[in-house]
Length: 329
Image (spheres, rainbow, N blue to C red):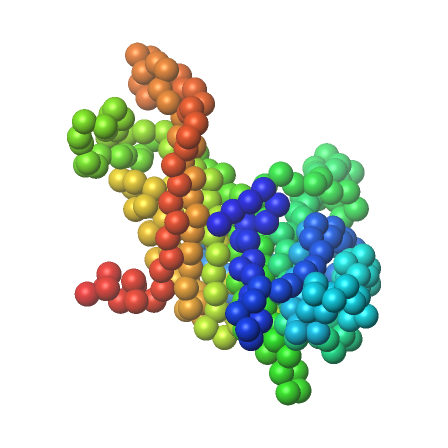
């Protein structure tokens, strides 16, 4: 599911003949200053996040377009219908200045809609983006205290929001055929309170069981809405911020004594679906980076640990509200 630059690889969509045919531009880095703030989001117990100023609104964008009229560029050396990918890049950069919303998904929907409105030969467009995140920096407030600067930011190495929107040409307005929100590159370490026991023991097993282990995971979380329009941010109380989903993951990790990463992500998914009933489903890709004990003969809970060797394990899982109903029974 994941790559270094884009959490979800877009599935190539076939044309009416079953042929895969599309082209586009990726790694379009676009930055907008003083975008519309995200205000009015509903708060949840696991998170202090209640909105963002969007003083810096940055994204790494991928555009993929489809249409029968592009066939001649492949089969007849005819480029008369081709919009150069360099032009696509310039189009995205220009539209960043026209977008007056506040969410990643809303921005992608806006730009994709403008592509379909501008170029009649485009029948469908898939827009995806990773947020380029920034952290506010502290500066002296002049009274012996510190405050957050509204001018100076640090490029963040932390997790970032993700969005993907797949639009088709409709009779009057573009139709959302698929929409995904997400948060990627979460990295969490829990020093104790996680176990891994009871798994298959046979002639291939060399891993010892652990009643208590230091657990290090990376995690990508994706979600879909029952009504995709809620992702556009026009009704902020129905929007699911990546920051709140991230915070749910770390709170559940803190609270739960899990017996596996599978157990952990299932409990995170349950909490996400409980907090956001407007979601249709939530899915995960987790990667096990758990350190290996080098010494555990120190006092108390102290240990010396080292990096794990390759290869590493991973887990993929999806769930919806039926998982909540089954648990309640």
